[in-house]
Structures are given as C-alpha cells and as structure tokens.
Amino acid sequence: MEIQQNGSIALPPEYAGLSFEKVWAMFQETDRRFQETDRKFQETDKKFKENQKMMSDLGRKFGKIIEHMFIPNLKEKFNALGYEFEKSSPNVLIESREHKLYAEVDVLLENGGCALAVEVKTQANIDDVREHVRRMEKLRRYFDLHGDRRDLYGAVAAAIFPGNVLDFALRQGFYVVRQSGDNVSVEEPKGRPKAW
Image (cartoon, rainbow, N blue to C red; front, side, top):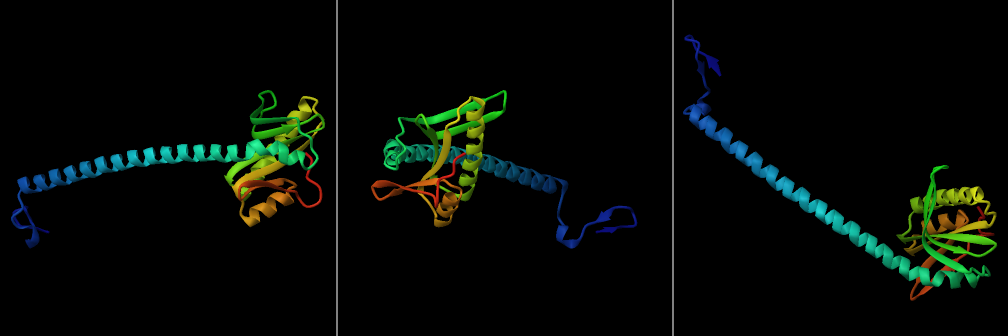
C-alpha cells in the first residue's frame, strides 16, 4: 500500500478493482458464514448435550441392572461365610447435618453383632475403592454418634474387576464380590477382613 502525493492511498495490484460495495459485500458474506457456523456449532452443542444425557441415563440404568445382579444373592453369600445377616437394605442414606456426615450405601447387610456395607459398581477402579474407604470411615463415625458399637465391614462388588483393583480392594480389607459366569462369588481379604 502506497500513499500518493495527493494523499490518496494506492492499493496493491491484487486489490485493483475493489470498490466499497465489493468490500461491503465480502464483509456481509463473511458475517453470514460466521452466523451459519455459529448456528451449526449451537446445533452440534445441543446434540452433544442430548447424547451426553442419554449416555448418563444409560449408565444409570446399566448400574441398576448390575445392582440387581448382586443384591438378591448378597445376604446368602455372606451368611455362607458365617455372618448370619438378618437384614439386607439397598440404597441406605446416612445423614447427620449437625456433624456434616453424608454417605450412601448401595447395600447394607446387618445383624445384631455387625454390619457390612457393599459398594456396587459396573467396573471397579482404584478411586472407587478409595472412596469406599472414606465411606466406611464416615459410617463408623455415624454409628459411634448413635451408640452403635457393632463391627463394621466392607465389600466392593463389580461386574468387571481388573486384577490390580481386585488386589487393592483385598489389601484394604474389603471383601470382593464379582460375577463369575452365572454365579456371584465372594473373595475374602488376606488375613482377616478389616473392621472399622
């Protein structure tokens, strides 16, 4: 671009023939394309959110199916290990606003001498096991606050249990409950199960 002696600007040769109308038309076309792109982005974002919700709903439903695979057999499986549980309660909510204690237990097995909290997952991972350790600590505190001195044990149940996760759960003192063909099997931790 050059400034000529009369003060006007000389455009480079590649811009020869451009007029205000042509430049304005190019700006309008660019604006139209941006609006079209924005509209497509919003449609894509909406579809993504719909798919995300659908996957979340599907995950919850699959999780419920997994829970129903394990829950009916748990009491019998642990009673075969000598526990003599009298009660099996699904989806137990533990809450104490005063002490800021909140926990949800997928299945709580109980008798007069002890309770066993089972966390049920589709596929267990290390973080699930760590979270269950924290849940067990909250439950112990909740029990103590209510004068409940029963021993408290834990188990992690999953349809898919990678080997490293299984070993980690057992080292934490948890029972491991897993699907084995058409049966549910319970693996005991090395030594004694941990009592919280």
